[in-house]
Amino acid sequence: MGTAIVASTQPGTADSVMYTGPAGGIILSQIYAANLTGSAVPLTMAVQRVISGQTEPVCTALSIGASVMEEVLDPAKLAYGGLRLDSGDTLHASAGTAAAVTVTATT
Image 1: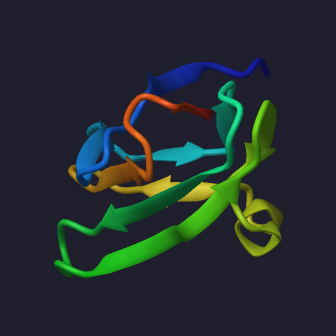
Image 2 (image 1 turned 180 degrees about the vertical axis):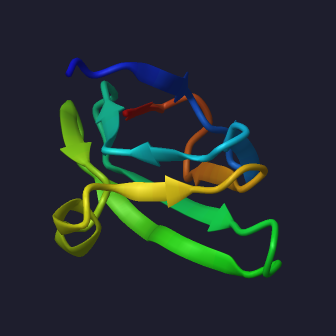
């Protein structure tokens, strides 16, 4: 089974929706953050659960180093196959510097 990119964006400094779970849901197997600038940039991501209304942090002020690409999902989520988004759940992202980090989610 191949990997498909379902979302790729450069978040701004304000929290914004990166991806919305489709009908039937989806499991995001990887979320990468690439920083091609010369300085580290903090990244914050969360899932807003539509049924419960709860916000589930994915990462909070995770420092993405200068000129690197990092896996955002923690090992516990990866052990369960990834991050599940049910229909209507939204994945949010913001960064310390607008358009400095590219975040990519795959199945």
